[in-house]
Image (cartoon, rainbow, N blue to C red; front, side):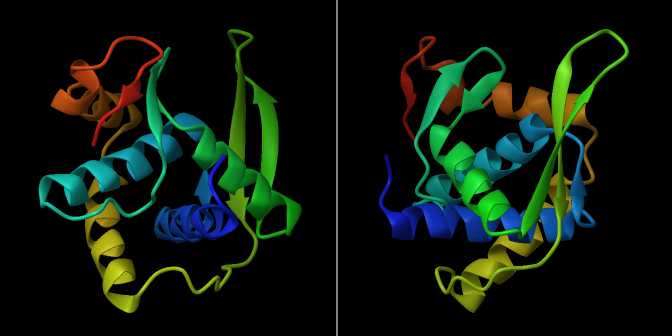
Length: 151
């Protein structure tokens, strides 16, 4: 479990990404993959990744319990409304509606600008392309199922 400051940092990034997505995400998968790809971009530039999240190789690509924890924080404090829906084929999925943008003081203005720049490009991708991009990162490809993805 991450410390509270790290959870708040991840929550602030998720809220920013949701705002850049128009305040709504119909898929936790898309939200997680965008944060993952933001971290990949930073680590490849030789910087510490934005979120401090730890990722593992999972059924639907890179996944992070830390992101789940941050979403719960946003939900518990009323910043994000989490909805649960069932698709026509019977699968359950979650939706996320940004109710208010928190100021948690964890991100610098420069980090917010960088996140905004890259997120605006990533949200334009359709879900399938975004997943393909996340699955094809060498960091994910070099990881066995259940192992930590090394950024």
